[in-house]
Amino acid sequence: MIKAIIFDLDGVITDTAEYHYLAWKALATEVGIDFDETFNENLKGVSRMESLELILKHGNRQDDFTKQEKVTLATKKNEQYKTLIKRITPGHYLPGIKELLMEIKEAGYKIGVASASFNAPTIIDRLAANNYIDYIVDPGSVDHGKPAPDLFLNVADHFSVRAESCIGIEDAKAGIEAINRAGMFSVGVGTGTAIKEADLIVQSTSELSLERLLLAAGS
Ligand code: G16
Ligand code: MG
View 1: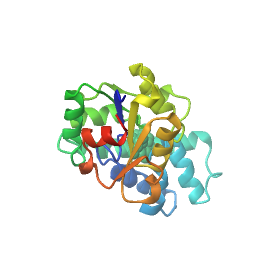
View 2: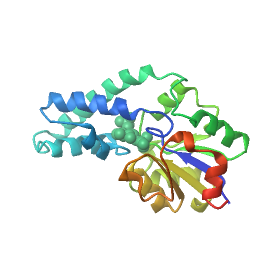
View 3: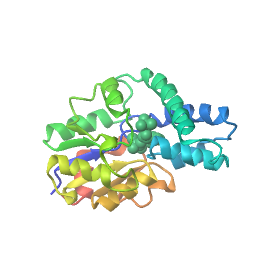
């Protein structure tokens, strides 16, 4: 029986993926690395430092910076990102998500957020989504990011529910793998092949409803 529904943030609750893309693109350009939306797909759900490593490797510049310099680069990207997310308002939910959160809350299921982002609490604040969300994982508190299951398992643990009683919703390949490895029912949002391993696939967040999720998960 399903007891908790766990949301990814970027690309599921709101479209911050675009802001990550713009901030990384600015940084990549600064260090002379070509960066486009196709490559950006590889960074979805991936932590800040790992994303930087992937970008440097993509430009064959992974050995050109010290660890400290890499931290400085990642911090710079984050400062740019923090400026961009100031644009987020309570009007910036992806289609149908606010209604879905309200529906789930009203029906008495637990709602968690399993995001790789250290900025998740700020974004949830800016959306005024605190009333719906019971728990946000601190990504610094788990050993491994997505595609490891840790972020999702941390939520189940917090709610004292079994993994089989959770549904996870994601837009990224690494995120779907994390949910599947956690032993939860996975829901993929999107049109690309990135989410092809999900148990249920929808093209847009507007297609999600509590009834559809529960039916698909057999609950
Ligand atoms: C998000 C994004 C990633 C980002 C990561 C870390 O994951 O999809 O692109 O690199 O968080 O974010 P930050 O630099 O803000 O700590 P998710 O799991 O919400 O999709
Ligand atoms: Mg995401």
